[in-house]
Length: 285
Ligand SMILES: [Zn+2]
Ligand SMILES: [Zn+2]
Image 1 (tube, rainbow, N blue to C red):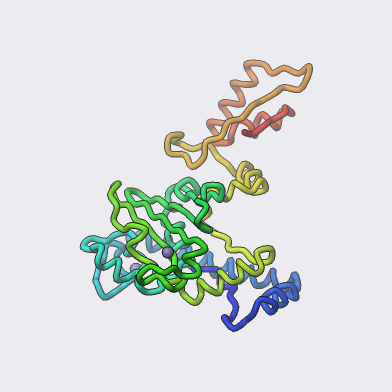
Image 2 (image 1 turned 30 degrees about the horizontal axis):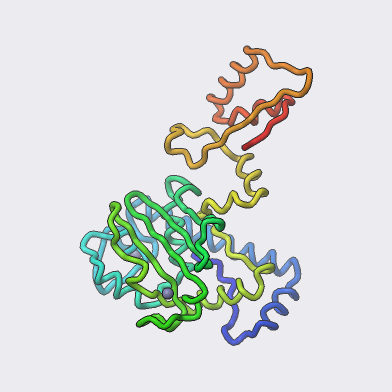
């Protein structure tokens, strides 16, 4: 499920940078291609199972709950699960990055991007990572700050951990302070890489990108190229507005506008793309 470019916990700062900078472009490409392929396979299994109301991780129904069979699908709150089960589950290192991927995939099933608020300009001062992910009547929020990474002096919190909140039907099910969820060794390896080589290593949320995806202007353009009109604008993932400005001395007939609107409806192509073909200046806001 997760991009496993990890390093040994014995590797020091110099070794990590050294190793990454000495990789050839071919080695990086080959590594990434394997990761993307593995990721695709995991996602397809996840999606296939999910569409049958099953969990690809444990093979059981998504609504199956047994106290002794812990699984990430517990985050969908199967029938019978109580807060005490969850708190006990979260004492073990379930894996921050695995959980993040899982929740992102669930939230993206029907509508990509908009159910995952991972915008970096929304993060509170005391936190390094903060995100809220929504699916149906559930809302999961994950966060950690510097003090959580180091471990703080409250009871059961002296180790590196993250925090989690779950809201179900607008009611708090798990509060941020209910649990200090320990990072797994894999998490710590990735965090180490992110800290020491942020220019050389990144975690990409393939099939589970959040709103932060369009914080990058390159992605915004890419997204615009592939954008199609939604059947229902109320539930559309994105809402865009275009300002169409005719070049000096040019005009467009009403008939042409009608023709383009018709084509836009029929082909689901945003009007701005069709107008662009007619050599007009376009500005996406
Ligand atoms: Zn499961
Ligand atoms: Zn904490």
